[in-house]
Image (tube, helix red, strand yellow):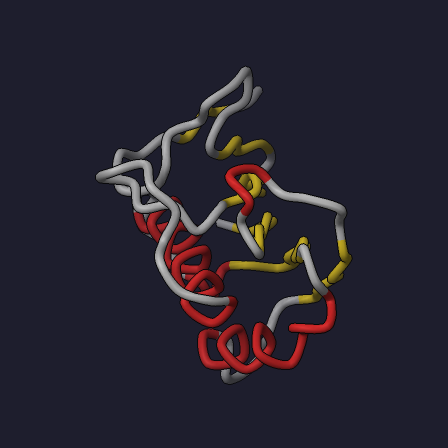
Length: 125
């Protein structure tokens, strides 16, 4: 059985997918973009501001279920320019100061809305 998770405090799904799905105590959060859920617009600023916006969107999905960033087991970070890794990593690390989740980071040709970063996550209840 699976439970669909949705919150208005994170960007709405714009296609045939869910913000998150829970099964067997695991929560699979779809890739979050640096989009303001209230306006649907890309967060202004560079990679640092966009990374912060993305993580706050992940956190909003988790909070809708009474959870937080500490419940994340693994993330996958998609970047439009891996040359900006150090800047992204500094912001990312600020959200996970202790016991960070496992992570993979990959460079992609492009992201929706010309975003610089997108992050998906797997969390445990």
